Structure formats: C-alpha cells, structure tokens
Image 1 (cartoon, rainbow, N blue to C red):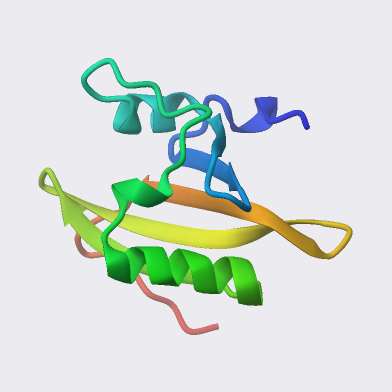
Image 2: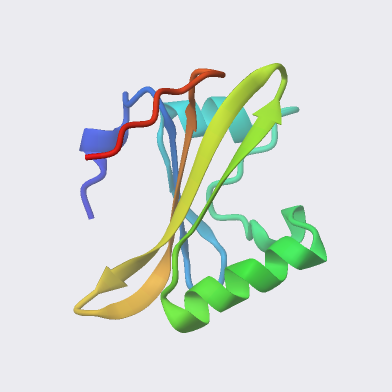
Length: 110
C-alpha cells in the first residue's frame, strides 16, 4: 500500500495490523514515537499501552468502532482519532491520527 500522501502531513499518522504490529509511521509519527533510538516499525504497540487502552484497542479491532479524545502532552493539546483500517470491508488493523489543536478550538454548528 502506498502511504506517500501521509509522509509530510502536519499530524502523526500511525498504522498497525490486526495483531498490533506497526506497519507504517509518517515523519511526524516517527519523530513522536521513536524515542531513545527505539524504532517502532515492525514492533507491537499493544504493550506500550495500559490495560484500559489495550481493551479499547481490542474492542476497535473486534467491532470496527472508532475512538477519539483529546490529551494535553508536553504543553500541547492534541486530538487523537483512532479508526479501523479496512480492506474489502474487513478490519485488518487500526489507523491513528494525532494532531496538535488550539487550546480554544472554534466549534461551529452547521
């Protein structure tokens, strides 16, 4: 699969397969998660999460549901959006988008 469109996006794009093995990281994701010289490509990301998060990952893989939330990390507010990766309708992994958002993000009703 060609992920070149995501390489220079101004958000972290991380993709794992159904076993939690990281199969793609764009530049921002590598900068964010490859700390202390540890390369996450080809590694299982599940042990990096607490039991509650592991249960959420298992649920998304089993049900095809998405998950989104905001965090405050290193003084930056971020939106995390996690959604199943499907091929021919079958869930084969997860995609996570992580982006810095303004502290007072506008909200519109349309």
